[in-house]
Length: 342
Image (cartoon, rainbow, N blue to C red; front, side, top):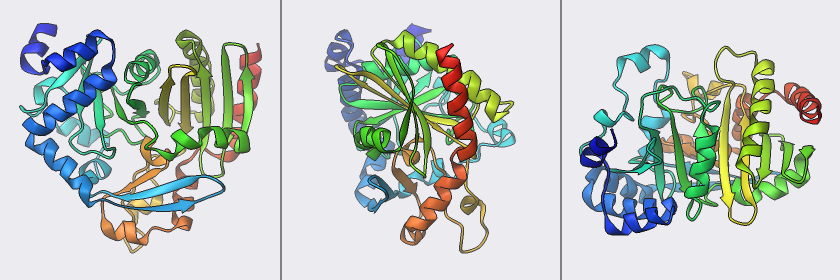
């Protein structure tokens, strides 16, 4: 499989190989992006479209939510992700269906690092599993953590659950984008201190629950990957039981790695995939389908009319509708404390 990927898909370049030899996949990906902009017209058009974006900002209780008008995201935002639609289309992340001009970098023989042709970030990547397997975090949290460390010279990595914004819920993938692009990257410590509660702490890990009245999340801080995995698995089992879901419980995850502090994992808990505004048939309709970047503080509206209409109150309605129920969040924290301490 690896030789076929090298021949057909993988980009070969002296500069990229140099970074890969240093395990610096952040700068390797950055170099890939520059090459792909020159050689893949669709990607160049996608980045040209970023010149057309508009941004407005809303200040909440000490934190920020931005709204970005980004017409290039119309396909992703409006994607049909019901089972019937998924079965009827070819998977656009499978290697045999990639555009002929799209090339990537092989990561640990299991992930292809690809440039995203519909960017939100100034530099935006899709990290797709080589094999066609379902979007599930339970058995791939290790991969998420490794990716975020190995791309950390430039990027943070995030995961959208199959019912929480993943436009390819049938194919395991992550995404990466510039560090500090999302407001939560800079505001995390403030949110933790003002709205957070310590759930569990040892010399090896600190776990917090945060409710900033718009979003509810659990965060993990540790320098030890295996410790994070251990406690994430406990969290997952508790959240799964409380969510009472036959599928993966709804979540979006941001993974940020720092050479000194280690990993910081933020798990946004979700009640719904899309808000009622998305489905409205009248003037209340707003094409906003919150995923990790939106919940992280950059809400994407591909239609200019929605960008112009959206207000602070509308954002409050949307976030409160899709975020995990406040009472259930309180119960989750209580159970997690009991589980972690035993």
